[in-house]
Image 1 (cartoon, rainbow, N blue to C red):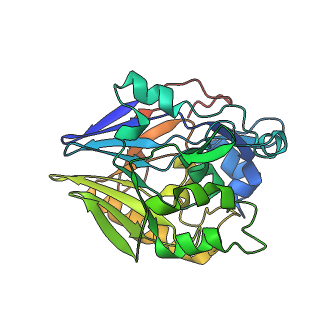
Image 2: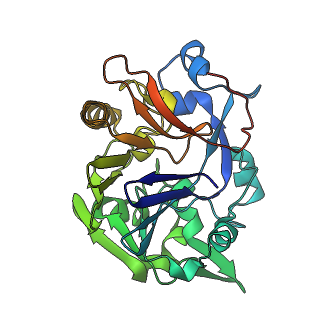
Amino acid sequence: MDSLTIGSTKITWLNGGVTMMDGGAMFGPVPKPLWSRRYPCNKKNQIELVTEPMLVEKNGMLSLIDAGIGRGRLSDKQKMIYGAYEESTIEEDLALLGFEPGDIDRVLMTHMHFDHVTGLVKDVDGRKVPVFPNAQIFVESREWDAIQHPSKRTSGTYWENNWRAIASQITCFDDSIEVGKGIELIYIGGHSPGQCLVKITDGNKVAVHLSDVFPTHAHLNPLWVTAFDDHPLDSIEAKETWINRGLEEGWTFLYYHDAYYRALTFDKETREISWSLKRTKEPAVSFHP
């Protein structure tokens, strides 16, 4: 498992499953000759998008950022549509680290799309039960409302069986919240009604996860937004604000979906990668930047 230390904070990536999504959808209006140079695709035009939650060990507490696609939660048809060829091994990964699912204190949901939330629930004897039974699950109020009342556009990603079993664990907040010292969820919108970033501060070091507003290293350009974004202009504004601030202040950017990089810093002048933590697992589609 890959890990990163920010000050005294340890961040470890867990295997929440792997999908192969349509490259055109993930890069929206950007022509394929441009995006495919930065993030390669297979012959079906699919790009590898991992769903790998971050376990944050800080101040004696365990926080999980998002939850992956789970195990046994997707139908054969859904696996085909989303190219889900590998399911979650989060419980096994936690065991290798000396933890159990019941040890997780908090789950920080950047948003509630299926590829981030499905891993919060599992099937046991025909019942849906929480995977992390003792965790307080933080969700921005607009996002919690959105998953409970999906529109025609969002019903394909907001599923009732992903929230019913965890409803009693949910803590809603408006705009922003500090869930523990140095760990913040901050509303940015754009991709979904309640899309949030996660900002981790330890001393003078900062790591930020912009979730699906900045899903892979190839989405650095503010105009490169996904076709899944509910409000793409808001995504562009959020990227301009938070990426520019991160570049100026030397923040580390964290990734949940990127098949090639776990974390990056960028040169504020050239906007080129100045430091990287690469994903050690062999990707489905080779890439040599």
